[in-house]
Length: 233
Length: 406
View (cartoon, rainbow over the protein chains, first blue to last red):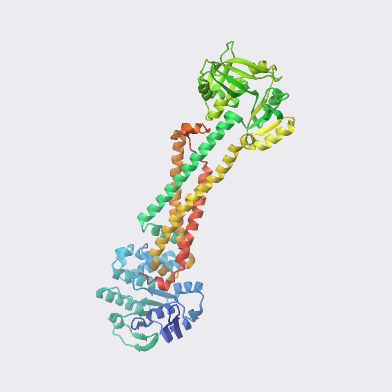
């Protein structure tokens, strides 16, 4: 399988505090295409920092993050914007949809930034909203959707532009059990059908139980990296 | 760009009441500023027109000595011929020869120093529209034995005289000898400048010329121009043609009026700029609040790949849209207000006191159309300036931190 992300001796030290905080310590991980990975660990273990760094939202203080043959650790910020837009999908804990846009506009938004043709954009956005079960909510704004529905729109947005991988930061943390399972089913289906690499940071055992790979971080270092065979649901 | 405008438009209506408040502030600020500017302009314009039309004209020609000693002995040699020659010029509409001298006017129990203007009634009505200023009595129509005099309403009050009263004028003839003659008040004129009303009387030039002993005596030629703005070049030109005379334009004759108009033109736009600046700070505050309220959302936009330049543009567009709505509405309402008040007039409380200083008690505010366009440009410039700080704050956000903001 093709390697999507490879980190080498990745480290991140926060020096703004009185005592420097080593959030990541020489992390070496490879993510293969189509993997469904959960990054777990206690609070402060470095999960979010790891996601930020491999997502190009934060710069590492040492090491490399190679995506599609490019080391984003040394990439200029102006190029990183473009790189994120074309290669990475994001799902946030608090959904973070754009409140003034409808569901279909939210899903189309990244494609719009990519200057995709209008018809292609609309078809893909409709297709994605259909896949997440919201084909009847195309023109509804986020404030009129439930938390679960908003997170499904966020997943559709992250996947619509067909990124190399999707980073999801605790995507089920704000959802009730039914909505969380529903979302995980959708993500698992999309992972399989679209062969998109999914990387979650999570505390949620419901996510961990579905992941085929679970990486545990403790104090910024990889404590374990386990692969599981999961039965289809 | 279309998408940015669409998002910006929706963003500004997210907090409808706040947006309406700032738009209302822009509208009221503009209306207030434009109204005060228009009133000020009307006041100065009215004073300018009164001074030029009824008092000094655009250019005056005198004997050089007449300036210090306004007496009949300092006449313009060949004054009538000069006036005729000037009338032939295409850039001059009227050249009115006058016999002007200082003297004393007396009623039965009062007297006062006045400037006596001997005029040709027909030419003078074309020059200063003196016939239109008569509020009581007639304009040089009487044919009685005693010659007619027109005096100001204020002077009539001072002398306790009225239409039909007999008054005595005392002045010097061409030899410098004092002469006195009796006149009957045929009409009272009224202009805004009370001091002019108190100090100026009009008689027929034929009458006063006979009294001073020279049939065609001229001490003053009052000139009105086709293009008033060319007063400097034309007065220079006349001066070169008639070097033995003293040629002065209105700015020389009324320097305080000239400078007050110069200052006014400069100050009006600055008054409005200050008002627009004040409103812009309100706008800046509104946009800044809206940025602080959507830090997480802006973080998401930056995280998913929206470039900082686009986020910056979005904030500038939001500010510009608000200012365009407020500015355009404010300008249209101001235009309507100024047009209505320009027709109906605005009564100034206690305005009669202002007349002492040559100002009217009813003003007709007006503003040049170009002024509205100038203000529109200023509004857009200040809106863009006001948006820079909030937009800069927005693009300084770190997406990794911003997306986690509560």
